[in-house]
Amino acid sequence: MKLSFAISISKTDFDAVGQGDFRKIMPYLSSIGYNGVELAIREPAKVPVRQLEELLASNRLAVPAIGTGQAYLSENISLSSMDSEIRQKAINRLEEHIDLANLFGANVIIGLIRGGILKKGEQKSGMYFLTESLMSLCAKAENKNVLLLIEPINRYETSLFPTLSSAAELINKIGSKKLRILMDTFHMNIEEADMFESIKEYGNLIGHVHLADSNRLAPGRGHINFKEIMRSLNKIDYNGFISFEILPQPSVEQAAEGAFNFIKKLQR
Image (tube, rainbow, N blue to C red; front, side):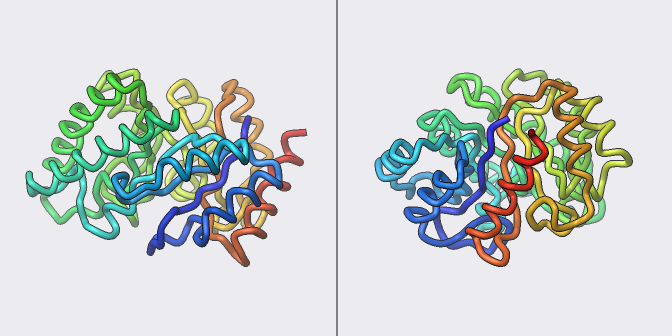
């Protein structure tokens, strides 16, 4: 399994990513031994594509996935909004993410841009709108050969699809081979009755992995049993990227190095 670290290429209020000068962060990640860098991007149209391509190539880094949640946090656009114009704006933005992902050979994460906590009585409509929106996006993803990753997020952040089982139901309903699960141990620790059994049960649908400890710090700084997490991933023959979407404390560099070293020891 290859390792990557999540960073934002612009300033963001989302704190579980590395922030700072990405032109300096990428060489540092490469020097540690990382294989990739996960990019959190709010507006694909403003991305310095050529500069990123040069940085990635010179540092031998891949882009396994592109995060999209900043568009929801900063602009409140979502795929499940009760407002059709807002939903369409979210779809349009994610189509831009898909185009960008196609350039980098990356996947696109459907995290909080699906929508947050719904008001009373909106659950059924929200699920319907999200499903319809994803069907439209899957058609685009299939055309561009880009994988969409639905990320189960805990109940305190969203009303929609908090568990691997609920995400699997959605994927089976939509029926696209370009829609898979992003499993995140921080959220799983809250929502899954048995994290390890969930990995085994839905392993055939897992397309990407986020590792963060129970406190969202680097693995090894909370109480999640990552030895068993890694064993479960091995049992499903997962060979994709593992990405650290964690609080960059005490610094981006220390968090990245600590996470890398901790998981590398478990891989031996």
